[in-house]
Length: 384
View 1: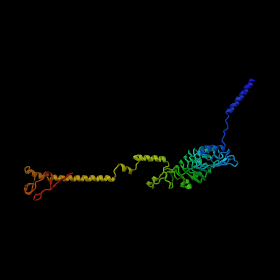
View 2: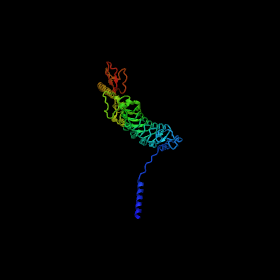
View 3: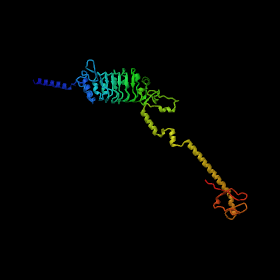
View 4: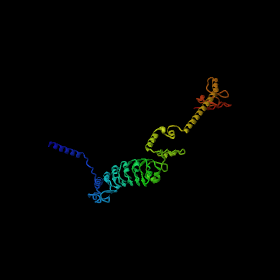
């Protein structure tokens, strides 16, 4: 009896342990529950509260909600310009959703959670919201997608070329007015059916594929200052990925001003280094700031030559004066030390009849010699 009791007890313990270890099946919310969660988070003004109040979204014909023919699954949701806010994640439970149009609201968050749960989506319109983050690689899962409009949001990062290339049925791709960076992929070649493409007003850089420019026109990528190409009005590229940089020996020197580097960060750093380093300055700028021009040097040389010529002329004149005054000094010594100069009659200049006395200091002056009467003598000063 005791053994039977122990056996029953062991069986009950094993059953209880198995029940505890067995994981409970995940309970997913219904389409109506998913819409209700979305409304409670996004409809801050209660615009949908009056209609979205029945127990079933399809049976109650909720505003903006479309359902399958059997009335069991939600297949479309169109709620444009209702000032809805919040995350898109609750809508990821609408696995049979085909159309999602939420344009002109204030929805935020990222697209990752939504795109992982709506593999059957065909039309996705989310322009003019506050969606951030990157354009997800999960787009590659939406093989039935035909229209994709993510314009006028705050999306960052590159355009996922590999993921988009998987969407062979895509006809519309609008990515304008975001913050996208990196290269512009050649979607014209990767998606032959793509007819409407716009990536303008972003921060894209690098070379514009010729096929994109030819098929979609310049307006499809306008407003991206870092883009360049081979055909005007696009500026020439300083470096083209996987292609040699174009060189033209006959190109004018001014053409370098219109070259757009494929890497704007490297361009800005090199320009700042060039502006701050005297060694990288242009020859004209260096001559204007640090040295004398050729004309100034020539002027200084001519001035120095004229000065030397004037100085030599003064020295020659002075020597001539000194030689002419020696005879007058000898005459003064013959008169016994009397100060004066003899005239032609043997008298003292300055003491003869009708002569004015000599002015003091005249002994240091030079005479050009007396005339036949010895009446006067010309005195000249030379100075430097």
